[in-house]
Amino acid sequence: FREGKKIFCLDRSLLLRPHNETARDCVLYCRQDFNKQWKFLEEAVCEEGCLGYILGPPGTGKTTTTLAFLHSLSLKGWSVMCIRLWGVETAKILQFVDGETRKAQINVPMGDAKWVDNVLREWTGGGKKFLFLDGYLHYLLDHQRIKGA
Figure (cartoon, rainbow, N blue to C red):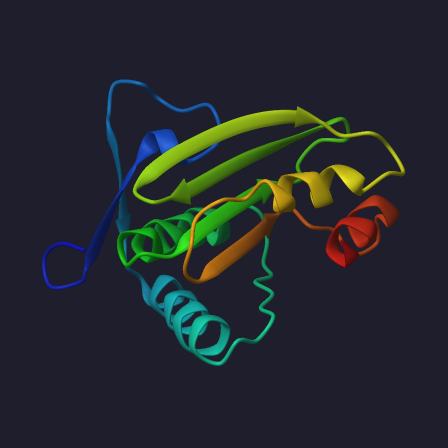
């Protein structure tokens, strides 16, 4: 956070999508929705251990805010992972483990969620863990299988 928690800066390389390479940081204005989502993730999900869903139209900052939150958790010793389910045949994975950032893209076999079991089994790092499924669509059978893995 910067300027009295009014601005949050996030390294652009963590966004898992193409971006402008000229700027290193993505500067986020901490508007009301950003703060509300951050509080929800911190209190309901991390402290109370609830399963959390963040819903909203595209482009409103759900993923970017959650990635900023995950990065802040990693600085506190958490092991965090984001699995981006956008796309039918591939999944992008971002992990923060023991101060290290790892990225991968894997092929996703249609109708088979065993790949998720493998990814979770290979998830190293001690302490508390936080898993973020980005792009989860409840009406897709493959996504339902992933959630159940």
